[in-house]
Length: 285
Length: 285
Image (cartoon, rainbow over all chains, first blue to last red; front, side, top):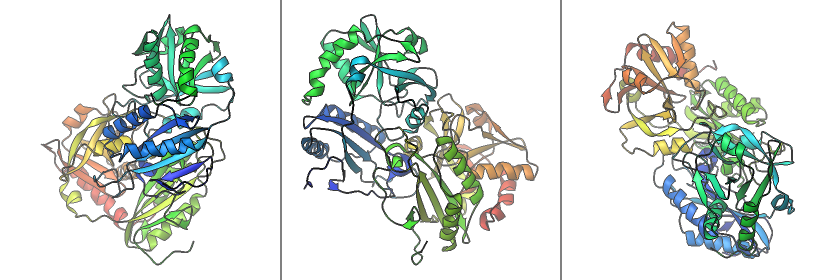
C-alpha cells in the first residue's frame, strides 16, 4: 500500500485510499457487518490481537468471509505508526449485495473500510475523578444469535444515546427487555461487590468489549476475583463502587449514578494502576 | 433532475445519478436509517402515500429529519414512469456522521439513496398455488422503540434467511424471544380463523408492512373481520389457512408449513380478488 503524506484522518477501502463506498453495500442496507474500534498510542495499536480474534469470531457467527486478517493487522499497524495517537476503526461488511433482499448467495466479497480518526481531546478528569452516568429508558432486545458481537445493528445504542443532551453525563447504563443489566451505550460496566468484580453476562445482548476482556484477565492475574454474572437493577442499586470500560477510555470510575454518589474506590484504583502501562505503551498482549 | 436514457437499474444519491456514498454515512456504521420498498407497475408506484407516511413516522420516531417528502414522491414517480415494472427502494439515512460515535449532533443531514431494481422474474405459481414455508430457529429480540419500523438494522432477518438454502422454501416465519409469532423474514403473516383474519400485533418487534395495512383496510371494506392479535405457536398450529403479504408479492397463500399442508382457502382467495385491481393497475390509494 502506498500511503499519502500523513494526514490525521484517513479512510481506506479494501486497501486503497478512497472516500466512497458502493451504495449496494449490505452494511448500508441492513447493518450487515462488524467493526472494531482500536485505540492506538505511541504509534502502536492496543490489544490488536484481541480485536482481530473478536472480528474473526464475529465473522464466523455471521457467515462473513473476512479475507486476510494479516492484511488487516498490517493496515492497522501502518495507520497507527504514522501518528502519535489515533482511533482506528475497521468496518468489515458482508460486501455489496449480489441480489436484492436479505438472502446471501455465498458469492459476496467482504468490504473492508478502515478509518483513522484523531484521538479525541480529553482531560484526565474522567479517569481520575470518575464520570456521571444515568440509566437509559430504552431497553435492549434479547437475541443470543447476535449477543457479544460488535455488529453494525446499533440503532438501540443510537436511541439510548439520544435520551440525554447534558454534556455532564458521560454515559447511560442499559438494561435488557427482561430487566437484566447489560452495559453502557458504548462501554461495558463492572460493579465491585466487596473485593470482587462482577460484570453482566453477554449471552442475550451486549458487546463483549476488548477492554472488558482485558480487565477480567488482568484482575485474575493480580488476584482480584472477577465473575460474569446475571445482574439486575438491585445489584446495581447496591453497588458502592462501579466503573465503565472500553477500548479507548480504559477504566472510568462511576462517581454518580442517577444522582446517587459512588466512590472511586480501591478496587477500581488498583485496576487502573495495573492497566496503565498496557494502555499508555501498547504491546500486543 | 436530468435522467439518463432509461436503464433498468439506477441509483440516485440525494437527487443525483451516482454510484457512491460516503464511508462516513451512519447507515453503514450503525444501520441508522429507514427504507421503503415500493412496487411499481404500469409506470406507477403502488401505495406510495402509505409508504411515505410510514417513512415520515419512522423518521419522527428515530429523530431523522427526512427533508422534502414531495421530492421523494417526485423521484419515485419519475423512476416508475420510465419502465413497465420495477422495484424502487428509497433508503433514507441519518446522514454522514458529524462526529465519531453513536451520538447525534442535530446537524446531520439525511442521505437519500434511491434504487430502481428490475421486477424479479416470477411465475404466478406463488400467488395461485401457494408457497412452502418453514419456521425459523432464530427468534427476534423485542424492542418497542424499534417495533413496526422498516429500519436498517436487519441482521436478524439476514440470519433467519441464512437458515435454509432449499429453493422450494419461499419464506420462514419468525417468533420473538418471548414466543410470539411476529412475521416472515420479508413478509407479514395472516392466519384465517373461521371467517376472520388475525395478524400479529407489532408492538414489540416486526415491520408494519404496507401490504399488511392494505389487507386490513380492504378486508374491513368488504366485510371480512380482521384483528391484530397476540399469536403464539398454537395459534399457528391450528390454522388451516394462512397467507403472507408484502409490497411486491401482494398475497401468497401458504400451502405447506413445516411439512404440514394448508389449504389455499376461500378467505385468501377472496382477498386476492379484492386486491388484484389495486396491485395490477396502481392508483395511489
